[in-house]
Length: 557
Image 1: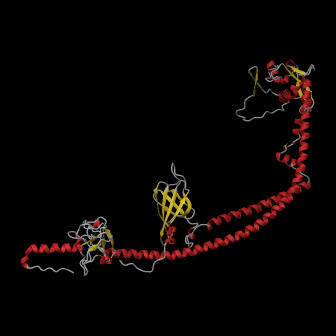
Image 2: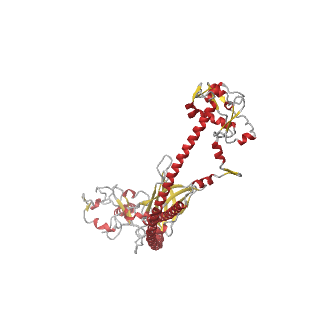
Image 3: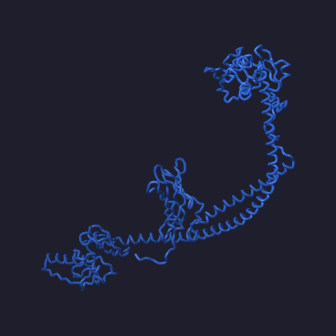
């Protein structure tokens, strides 16, 4: 019930001020309306604030006279008795905001000389607030219409993406089925090729085993012949050098042979003689046959120009140095004697010179040189390949077995490779089919695509379901920020965030990772990238696949 006031002229200025004061108090406590709803209270709660009754705190803790509501003193613990003042720290003020969005603000903002409600209802007294609700409402409606259109168009494209995604999965399923059939066919071929290979390899193995045994026996005979030849050669040389036939070699006997003049100064010194006797005064026949001849033989060959010591480095080649009595003995190679026609005809035997300079021919010492020369033709040496081919020849029947086995192995290897290739294709296909493209496959069309975003320093790339990378704009290597991990959005809408982990390691830090926030848009586009934490990146991405179905209805402003 609204109280009436009358002012007579005789009341004067004082009564006029009294009226203004009373009106101010009433306006601070009530919203001037038919039912006097207290200030700061929405119409939906008006029944709880009945001026004809005592007021019950909304938490039920107290019952106070209604005159104590909005008296700028907090009586209720929950602050419900002061909805229109700033007296209670826990209270809230309701902004009607006609033409815009109604809502609550904390009571502390009431009468703080700042207009918080667009209708200015939170401020009374000296502060005059402009009502901007219509303007804000119009802008909100325009934004709402834009978002509604975005949602509508985006959702339509999401439906199209979902349809494409289902077709994509269907095609991959069909491709997998075909590959499985082909794999089974190739497995059968491989099994058959393996059976054939094992069949033809068995007789080949037996034939090659026979040849191996024959070659081993032949090699044993050759080795025995070489050993006998070497022994005979050493025996003949010992007989030649043992001039007194006492079964041992002495320093004086060595010194009678010009062959042992290593430095070619015209005589064999004591040190040179001792070198060939293993630094002993004499050498037994047994020692000569086992070690002595091995030391002496190269010098006999050098006399004939047939010994060529191995050269490891032409530029750094040094003369060999031998030790005798703690002093180095340098071995030099003297100019070869020119052979007479008679000596040339005796090339198959070894020619040695005694202290008097007389030549001596020792039969059978260098027969191996003749064997090596047999490999040479008039126009040069035979090639190594020719020799190997000659050594690897088998009889016709064995060669046929080898050829058949080689062919079977080649065909099996080809069949095995075909199986491995198709198994690899199936593994890659299964990896794609195991990806979560959303409950309606709407994200599937993004597979195989990549999107870039450039800032002043870097080019960021997102390849959905594969990787996130970063590359300097001015050149440099690409940095892996993460590989596809999983969807990490909230439980009620997990398809709003992607997570890429296992990126390149940060120096003295963790492995890089990236989160992709996906918002509704009418196109698929990467719109921004930031690094909120060290080595942790955040991609902003829009896609129709993130647009939800529009609600058919409207909200009142």
